[in-house]
Length: 178
Image (tube, rainbow, N blue to C red; front, side):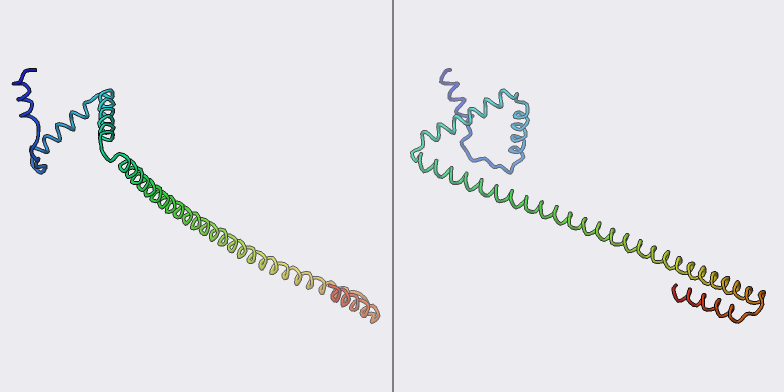
């Protein structure tokens, strides 16, 4: 390359501060973004490797290598601890939310079961009262039929006082036993 080409390249080097709020800067950013999207994966990897190379060279050429390394590790450790703490808090919130939802669902199911049990008990009480009523009606009918049979036997047979006393005592004993 000749001297004129080198001087031309030096003129194109950006050395002044850039106003990042201008339309031109936004257009420049858009052009760079489009160019970066058009890069192949191979080219992207090469750029990443070059960036890593420059970081390593910068590290090796720095005067305060040890403190920079310790500082980077300490800062990295703090970042990791913070990330772990945030993740643990998120997990805790998620577990608490799941737990509360599970408890609410269990309570809801328990209430449904209790309501079903109460409804079944009410239905069974109604059925039992109906059966008791029916049983009482049947007992009354049987008692009336028995009384009618006794009266018929008394009136259609010769009045024998001993017989009458025996019949009454038998029926009295049967009612006492029941």
